Length: 274
Image 1 (cartoon, rainbow, N blue to C red):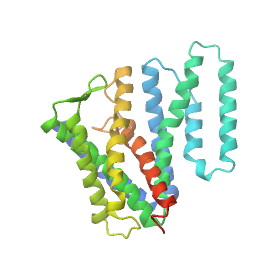
Image 2: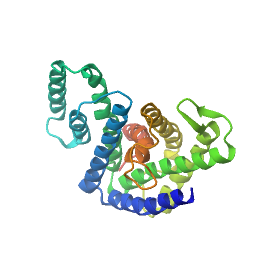
Image 3: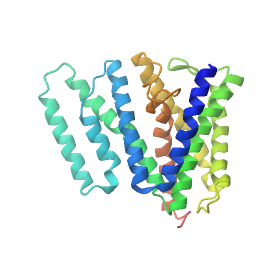
Image 4: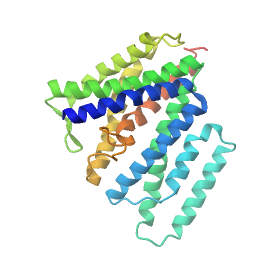
């Protein structure tokens, strides 16, 4: 146990520094970094689906995923998406394998699920000025990390009632509720410890505590459900002490869209100006 914890810490600290540095750089440094992570997550999602008997197409998940993550910068993005859909459905129509029907749904899930969540993270980074986008992105990630840490230790200390015993037996209601405290800590750390001016106040962003604290664990549970069906503990062994990229970003995949929707609403209604 101590060895595993040491591995996690020794990997997590430099990885966190790298992530924050690339987030600060922004632009294509950040986009390229996130797109690369997206491909690793897709590979792990495909492996989990295949392991549970839900076979996907070999190439189209990555094609769809790249289209999603590049959607804001592509020329004629909607038309390109239609062309991808037409080509994929046409090819699947003439696929004679026994998995051809399954591939219609699993390929779209593997192609869309993680890339949509990561696209939301990239859009958060592009919100407003450079400092505003940086702070919002770091706040989102710190809330997810805070939720994960506080849920783990809160569950260990106070956990009695199982949250979803058929999906993840170790998760408890008490741990889930403790995660909200972690979200508060993550948001406060981003807003008050980073010496940058922001158009957003702490109070204005407080609803994110509920959003991240709710949708982050749901993203975690979705991955747990997939891993249980596939009969594996981790999505891969790529990250020392942490499993795979999907294991590390499962909560962020749903938390980021929730954050982006809220941010878009308050900007759209004029509560924030840049």
